[in-house]
Amino acid sequence: LQPLYFTKEYMENTKTCVIILNQEKKIENVNPAFHDLLGYTSEEIIGKNMDLLSDRKRDVFYRKMWETVENVGLWEGEIWNRRKNGELFLEKRTIIKNNEQYIFLLEEVKSRSDKNKKEKRDREDHVTNLPSRSLFQDKFKEVLINATALKKKPAIVMINIDRFQEIDKTFGFTIGDPLLKEVTIRMMHHCDAEVITTRMVGGMFIMLLPDVKKETVISDLLENILEDFRKKPFFISKQEVFISLSMGISLFPADGEDEKELLRNADFARYRAMEIGENNFQFYTPNLNVQMFERLVLETQLRKAVEKNEFVLYFQPQIECKSDMIVGAEALIRWKHPEMGIVPPVQFISLAEETGLINSIGIWVIEEVCRHLNKWDEMGLPNLVIGLNLSSKQLQNPLFVGQIKEIVTRFHIDPSRIDLEITESMLMFEIDKAIEMLKELKRFGFRISIDDFGTGYSSLSYLAKLPIDTLKIDRSFIQNAEKNKENMTIVSIVMAMAHELNLEVIAEGVETEEQYSFLQRIACDYYQGYYYKPPVPTLEFETIFLKKN
Ligand code: C2E
Ligand code: CA
Ligand code: CA
Image 1 (tube, helix red, strand yellow):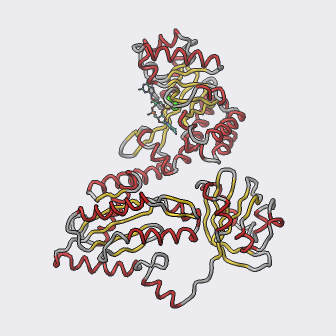
Image 2 (image 1 turned 90 degrees about the horizontal axis):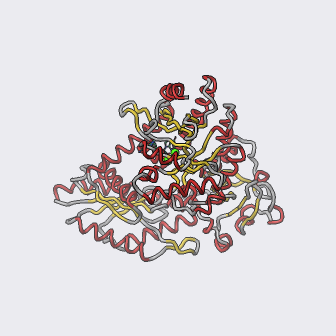
Image 3 (image 1 turned 180 degrees about the horizontal axis):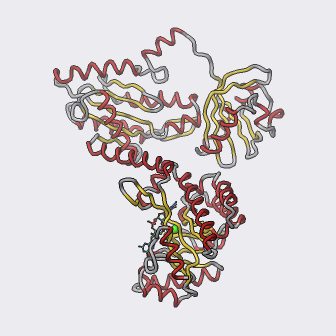
């Protein structure tokens, strides 16, 4: 989350102990709560390695903790720690990796063994003072049993505080709990006494409206709540924050005849509301089920596809215009789905990105490209260069550079035979960090090219700053070039400029003889496209290559 939240003011006032480490895991800064909890002074601790503070630095547990921080960016758990005076205590620890820093949030876990309190907790959610889950369940059952006989129309609303997990993980319960309390108060303010609400886990609530005469009664109520949240901010560690809600509604008996079905369908609807955008609500409709189900099925299958090795690479030949020889190929992934057949990347790459599966798929692609290069070297195909598409998620993964270096080293591949294709839009966020990463890849020897060039928003001046070798002109410019004078001019100018900057140019999506001869005229370096060949499987690529070269 934003370092913004770790303002000086927050650090000074929070009861949560905050420790900030630099990249080398040396302590850079601590807050007053740190001194109270652990008993060290700043002098004793600033500049020291965090490991010195731990009894458990050799444990598997401790190693795993750091591994998770590195891989996921976040670790949360309970851990025994020792104060300066030697006293052991249980702490709730959250570690966040934030750019170049690690942020530790520590809170002591106090024993909670008060019997009276426990009983109360069984009937009441101790955080929000709402009825407990089991009380709610009893009431829900009762309402449903009587609904038909009494001609009542109960409805369920599933409510989730958007991004609550993030807030809770970052600040811990000292911030999360008061926030939940305030959200509850502000929601309930709009409900009449009949409405029963409980909290499930985290920032998720269920509301039961025992008798809804018209749908508009619900939509008016929820609209009022949303309006309230839209207009009035909450305060998190003295900062104004707007909190939003996603809500889903199911109605008895149309959307479900028992508790389970009503809850499930309200949750489907809530999920849909969340997808549409924050701060809104959705009524359940049967086709939601189908959409969610399809997505879920695809996600499950995609997960398995990685293990079951259901991916293949196709290769599209890249031709040098001058010599008319195949000098390389772009590797393009396909999913050999057991029922759907060959699935193109547009149908699964974004899902893979959302689910994080892109990292393991990306690694498979790199390894597969290396395997092919070795095979083709053995077959006597001369030094081909293979283009490999990267996803922005891979560039955001701090482990990526290390991983790709390790793979090419393991396969004994000269990295200059791999051309990493990135798009301009991948550079839009955290451009400095991305440039650093590209420079490191470049120093190691990889080739780097800008894919879909011309479709991004970037200024031309940044091109000179990037460590790139090639521009791949997007097919939209190529495909209209022979008819559209403007596009023709653009392509010619890009060509001249690229050559001025010592960059090579690949024209993509060349489909016709006219496009091809236009490119020849303006001295384009390479082209690929259906005019020569579409992407083809390995064997076919080998046959094509041997025939042509
Ligand atoms: P891209 O990198 O722009 O790839 C070029 C796309 O244009 C390919 O679609 C290719 O089949 C298609 N194409 C090639 N020649 C022509 C032509 O003459 N005319 C037309 N109309 N199209 C042509 P494909 O294979 O469906 O890939 C789509 C996109 O999926 C790629 O766009 C790339 O962004 C992504 N992708 C493919 N493989 C991978 C991968 O291994 N990893 C990642 N992260 N993304 C991939
Ligand atoms: Ca590409
Ligand atoms: Ca492209």
